[in-house]
Length: 223
Image 1 (cartoon, helix red, strand yellow):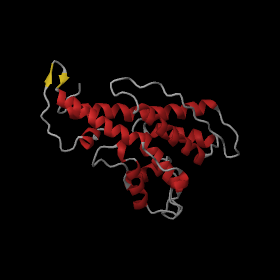
Image 2: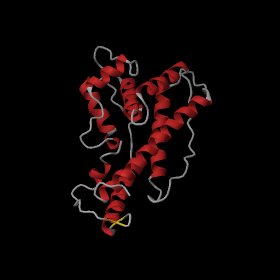
Image 3: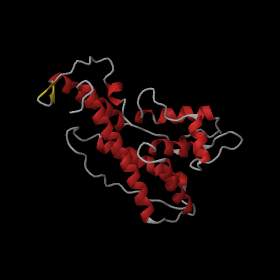
């Protein structure tokens, strides 16, 4: 995740940075700060589709791939494939993603794929499968839970990217609340597990952004 952030934000700049006594030249530091400011603004205004905003009609695989790739492009390097048809088929075989119905995908398929393709940046596919299985076992209202997790992810990014890039971000205090399909609260431990996963993903986006932008600012070497 984030390997191409620096290239994306600093496209067209000359790669002639020099390092003196462990620090970049002032011009390179200016490039980093400008790149960080641009990317931070993008992250503070990031919006990932909620379930109700997804297409109501059932989609073919190529349409699903296009939507998922567009929604999560900010997590990936330019040219890196977010998801492919082969990946989707594997996720279905591994019972991570529900099988399509007559080769068509509904909102639940799209939401699950977005979840998987985001969290595979910080978790293994098997770990993601276990998380989703725990949610299913608890009969969690998946639509409400998905929307709440996206909201927490966006809120965490806003907090992380509102900090001075030279200062460590503060601990996020937001809390998830899960309910089952009957509207009853579920086990708080499960909420905490998913909350930590969401915050881990947001921190990963932030850390990778800082590293990639610094690498770009000094010609490929991190400070």
